[in-house]
Length: 435
Image 1: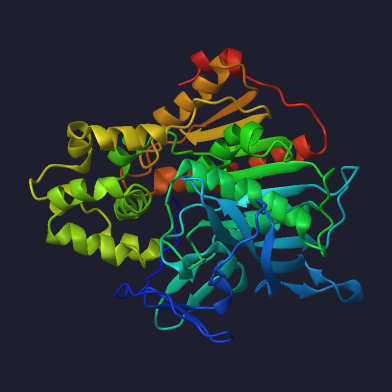
Image 2: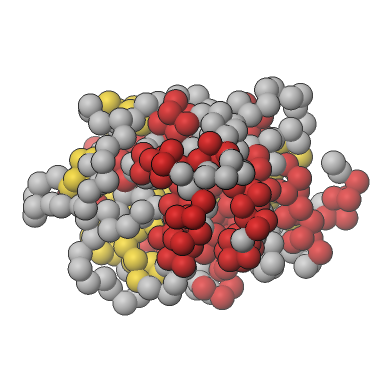
């Protein structure tokens, strides 16, 4: 559910199948992106195995001593992961080997970064944002706002691997927005991919951290929960989860009618793809405007959603005039699907720092704080940070994005301490006293 001042505009196009030549571009649902992003017909068996890689030019870089680039040397990745239905899936992303020396002692750590909301069009992928932080090519304007966190991490000497998530970038399916299993798997498998790259200094002994805010905070939180069962080889030193959408029922209420109302369309599109049984419910409840919104948003970046669908209420998408939340209450299958997305039912074995703005109304503060309480009750090592700010405007994204900007330095410092081997200090005992 991210980003503020990424007020970008993308021109949504008709949805068409992806097509490509061996060396030419890929046309993914009407938007042209590099051919690298089209997956092959067959994928490797191992999760995290490299499907392909190529050099990636960082837009914001300088020549350094000995021909090395500052802040690092980047590689575009495609790697194998497993989707929420247990099927193999190709995921794209980027690995950056930093120029800075790691000063914490021991092998160089790696942080797997889960981006905040980018959109659902393949052109919105974070790996493309590293190459072109601000682009307009007649089809899209995109802003690589996660580059700030990437560069701050690189400056500490930490290697960074960024996931594009399932279906964002890779052209064979739609991005499954805020799907907890696929977000968590993609993030953990990005670490495995970083280890597998020949040009990477990351080894099995490298400390591993996770970083994410908003959609990325949900993926980081989910990965921390899923790691013991899905990726026991990826031992975590710590995970930062900022403003995680842990309870999608509450998040749906916060988004509906806000500047980021279009994100409801991304969620619906992803759930319809992964759970075809929901199609009959969608057909029964969505009117022509709702169906058009789903098509438009399937190729949109976050700027499109703000400019084209900002402050729309879901009541305008339904045949009955009821809100999506009211429809969820009346449909047991929808309730089950959203309940399956709930984060907080498993216990992270690594320390987690969970931060949330107390006035956040887009990814509501109360449900994020509840995640911290749920983890604490299970005995997890949780550092909970409420970010206290005045109300900066209901539904405007300001209450959601400002905590990210103000807390990012502290979040990275906390993660760097974990990667250096400094134990975390849980404040679970004081959590009930904090609003």
